[in-house]
Length: 411
Image (cartoon, rainbow, N blue to C red):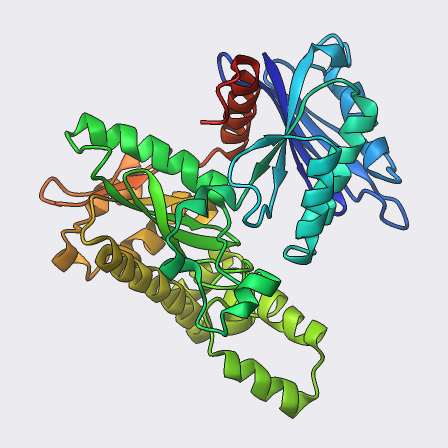
């Protein structure tokens, strides 16, 4: 069964074509600058057999982008399939499912309307996700379309973990609560970690894992017995860890103070906490951890401060989540920073020996791909596990279709 996985942005479209039986990626790519005035559109396309190709093409909307993607997928020289009819299903990444969607769902008109309603909670993401869904529905009539939600994995959180200490009616009337994000990534790496722990004699039912998704966006999740009990992102992705351009946790009164002092509008405050803060705001040089680490090594004081704050925040959450779970079996690092920065992993783990976390520095420095980087004396396992959200979305898509076929319901 061939599954097309889509992650649709406002002016971009990422895709992977996956053979669900072998989980081989047959083709992947990204269409950029969709609907952007002045053109400059481009599709970067790659197949396992034929390598990479870049195509310059203007795309007025997501329909045109999908049409171009289909032409590349079926191209005799650069394609991976003979016909679009070879695609059995499409799995769509949808950022926000609110409380309504706690599992993947097959999309119909009612589901489309509900996803649109969730746009008030994710105005930058859900409308963009809908563009890709609607384009596929128009261009692939009759092919099952499945929505897989970033928030769904976190739906098992208890109310005391997701309710904010505001008047309760703000939750009931406006949906103000912690939802969490990066759920597909956390689900994937937690599943991999559980397999590794079971091989070492740890029971799945009692397992206690902290997953650290560290990239341009960062989040951490506490998982007991495979179920989320807490996560660092909140109603929006702005809460929690320091990120590339997001502030993470901050005294909310600071924003009120700045709004008054600078006569700032809500949009300007939104721009401040989401686009001008984090590593970029502290360092003043970059939102990319590679640039930050390089500048810090060269003696840039603000870059060193940004790096220190970033690692301190991750360390603090590990301690908090270990306390919340009443123990800890494993810490998982994933995402662009988590998978590739041995320095960040080292700084985060240093000083956590009292929790049973002991890093093997040599293993940490040499880690490539999936690796266990703790010392033999460490009571807590430390893993680097590359995330694969597209593979997880493909699995979820196949799972919901098979459940529907058998009438068993979703998981």
